[in-house]
Length: 306
Image (cartoon, rainbow, N blue to C red; front, side, top):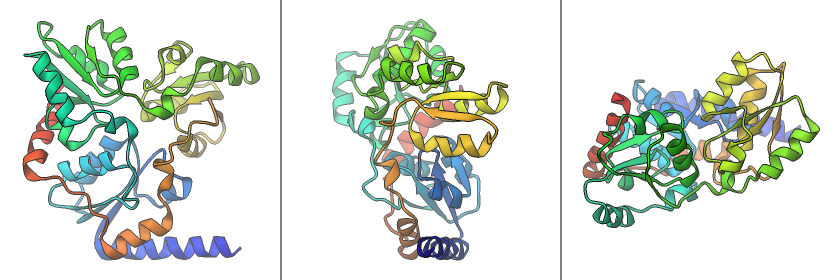
């Protein structure tokens, strides 16, 4: 009972300070359930930043990882952006640096660079156009056919896009370690226990896993599919934190993780205590320099124009 009381007290104090600070709390769908429950908005990273930018909030508390908070800072340079867990990073985003990308661009003069939003602001500033997992195929298909394309940093998403679009690309050798560790055998084991379940797969997964999918989509796309589809059972091949939203939005349906290994420690590091502390101190702040921010914004705006 003490933990319940403590949790309620924490939540009450977070809500009080949120009003006092004129803050908005954003939560990615991979965050712990208690974080999702206190958030004003829950969803995919870039869409959260876009929605927050459209509000009159002075402070954005981004319950996610560093590149997500950077995107919020790029789209809302006048707002204070807080990342409750300062060490919450993204291994995939760390697999490409601005310096390494500049070297690759020098090898391929005239190449257009497409970056997944799961990249740092410095990398976005070196790119021509961004993409999300939901619109990556559309973005790549919009590019001139006579220019080479570099796709960073996720090789699995890149391969999926190349297959769907028919576009040859120079694909970076990065990946999401969480999605990349999932094997077809893992999915087939769960499928053997739930033979009637449809398989929902994130395109950051390996090609052999994508081949088993009934539907390939971003996190938002997966949730939409489950809401609108009449089938009642689903195997979910993405980070387990999303199961909270599946169960909340579709309480009459059953969802099974494709593997118990699908846990991102960075995403799970946010706690109520850290959210409260960030509102109390207005730290840790995430900022982007004006020069990097302006260039990265152009990369994002080109995507939004497609």
